[in-house]
Length: 344
Image (cartoon, rainbow, N blue to C red; front, side, top):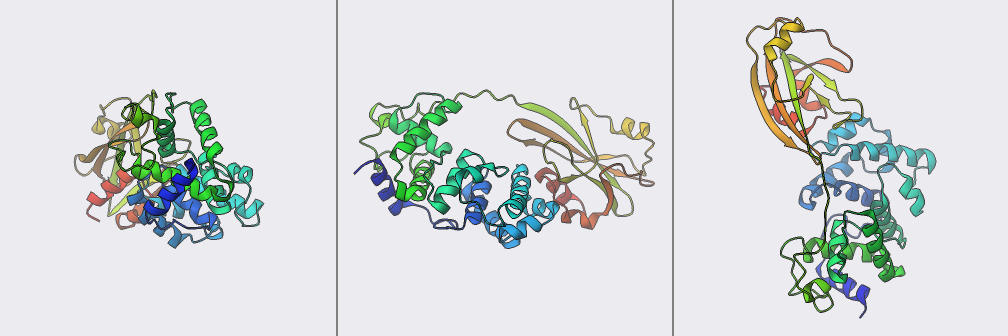
């Protein structure tokens, strides 16, 4: 048996029973792939079902308001994924008569879809012969074929894509790609891979040369930025103020309390309120604080409770809302936690 035959035989016997497994609808495959980009499978399953319950097809998603899409996405993080899906659905309606494109290049043009996602959708839905190379595949192929190049480099990814393409069976592209990903996800895992019962134990370079703990090689320098957010929860007659984030920053399109970002952890709430002519009934208190870790940023957030004599005027993108309405808005996870601590 050749590489692909061994892989497919293993996959048929060992694959996980997932809700999108065996799915041929490109829309549902797309939803699952986007959700799983930054989300563990166990968590992603519930969001997959919930997303499809609200937006069962491309037309429904395209016609939805962005705020509604973000609200359904709430808790998954990396909200640009949801915004991109919404925009891509609208593009499909406008440019493809509402039908998901069958061509790899056209799939790749959709907003938020890269090489991997286009290959995954194209191969699983339409059996297009393109390799879908994610982190699981990079790890498995590096170990099996003894690749010591840095997988963080695009050149290494292209090299591994070439290897995957060489062994790809044209009639079974979708199963082959799913099998590669599944092999890395449940057999050739990052830590403690199941080498003893692996069908590739005899042909795996890493196992034969005692390099399993060495491969894959991943060297990536990521600069982590610390940011300090001070959220102002104005309280007046059971009302508060929220605003919608704009610009190309994190959490674009989500709602939050008025924000003052500082260069460090020092923030004098009393001085700020005094300078801005905001009169309080009682001294502001720190209601909630938490460090929120993102891929390239650490958010140090403080939520200040500020009982007011009267509400200040709202600025751009701001609005008055009743405290009981806060849960109706799409917010970042950390803001959701703060709202949960309010007595509303």
